Amino acid sequence: MIHAGSGTSSDSSYANQASHAKATFLRLSIMMLLEFILFGSWFATLGLVLATYKLPAIIGPAYSLSAVAAVVSPVFLGAIGDRYLSSQKLLGLTHLLGGALMLALPALVKAGDAKMTLIAIFAYMLCFQPTLGLTNSIAFRHLGKSEKAFPYLRIFATVGWVIAGLTVGAMGLSASTGVFTFAAVVSFVLGVYSFTLPSTPPSAKNAKFSIGDLIGSKSFVLFKDRNFATLIFCAFLTSISLGVYNSFASPYLGALGISNVAGVLAIGQASEVIFIISVPFVLRKLGLKWALLLGMGMWGVRFILFALAAEHQPNLAIIGVALHGICNDFFLILSAMYIDRMTPPELKVQAQSWLIMAISGFGSAAGSYISGTIFGATVAQHPEAGAAAWTYIWLVPIVAAVVTAVLWIAFFKPSKEQEPVEADAAT
Image 1: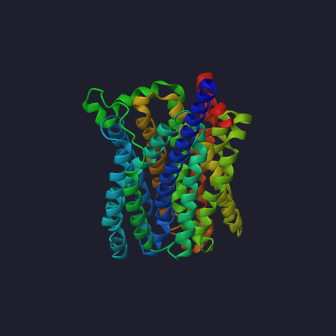
Image 2 (image 1 turned 60 degrees about the horizontal axis):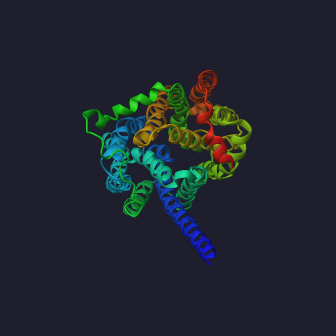
Image 3 (image 1 turned 90 degrees about the horizontal axis):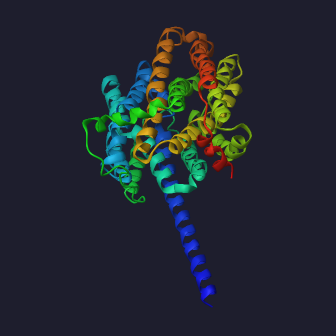
């Protein structure tokens, strides 16, 4: 009888743990869902909105400043999240402040005030960019040994972006300042919800303070690892393509005569759901290195399709949009998983921040600036050329993808200790 009772107690304990894990996964899923409803509701069609309100000249600068914000703020706030303030509270505060800033944008854009519009976008992105790393860090912290569930958790980010695109498109807001009001409401909701997330105290709370902590200088040691340095640099190169895509995909689709641009862009996020499911299989067959290469290289392929679409083949551009699932799932998600696996607890938030900095910061800034410059010299100067004038812009990400592939193959050599990402995800 004692033995039977012991077994019952053990079964009950296991059931409680399983129930708790499911509840935590649900709470984290809602966090991801809201984070990307917010991001996708305005960022995807920002270029189209600015062009509609006679501010096409600041499309490149707007996305460039968004990227600069990703350079300035994530490591700083990452250091705070690692040492001084619970991550869920930091997430909540940044979204509440961001919502207030977002409310100012409709009036500024309608007034044609280019300078203040850029300042408001920059201020908002200073608040928002760190939250991309924070949500990853919170997720990995509470998934614990179940980190292999991260790709499935990330599905809710994809669903969030799809919901945002379809909702904005259905409401007829793709080219309207209404996207900013919509985003503000979601930001307030997410800000409040963040305070209800599982407690995520600083992992290095008792560490001695230093001025270097405020700029995340102690995380520089991560770059001594060649694989980490290679990953971050290749993330930078790949995100040049991301900067080009974010800046000019929506106006280009408009130039091709495609209606409901927000809805079409949502196809890309919808494809992520399909490809996320394939992540374990691809990792098992290809391994981490080659799965990541697939994600990086596919950015080049999508822009080849964009270039070909100019020859009266707009469906090729839609196919290029649909490749977003491979581009993201086999690059962004696997990179985040790899970084969480290889970094010590006291540097995890900052390590994720470096990834966000490379992707949404330096890389996107370079892509937005370069493509914006080319846009000004080609499309803006020769609007009569139509979609054909955009070809020079797409050459930038195509070349970037080729260079990235060469560097990745040559320098990234994961050790057996760093490969469990593959084994775990495949189980």
